[in-house]
Length: 169
Image (cartoon, rainbow, N blue to C red; front, side, top):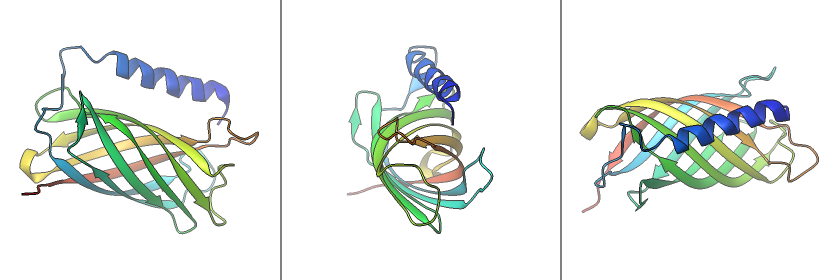
C-alpha cells in the first residue's frame, strides 16, 4: 500500500479517536469480557484474497474508556499473534464503532509477505450489541510493519465477527 493511502487510513483513524467526546457514549464500565470469533478475507485490495480466521479475547480490563485485546489471525499459509487497545464508542445504546490499534508477531509460510516479523494492526469495526446475547460486527483492518524494513507491503483484512460475552464468577 502506498504511503498516500497509509496516511489517509491513519488520518481517518486519528480523527475517529479525537471525535470521542461527541454525543455518543463510550462502553459502560461494566463491559464484560468477550471471546470474539470471525472470518473474512485478507489482501482485500490485492490480487490474492486468502480466507482468514480470527479469534480474539477482549478482557473486561479497562483503562479509562480503552479496552484491551489479544488476537490470533490465520490463513492456511500465515499466522499473526497480536495485542493492543480498543475503544468501544456507542452511537446508540446498541450500535457501536470500535477503532483499535496494536502490534504483534507475523509468521509467513508462502502466504502474504508483509516484509517483517513485527507487524502493526489498526482498524475500525461497526456492529450491533445484543447485550447479554453478544455482539455482531463487520470490520476492516490494516496490517503493516510501519517501515521497520525497506519492504512494507502491508495488507487489508475484511471480516464479520461475533463477540460472545464471557462471565467469570
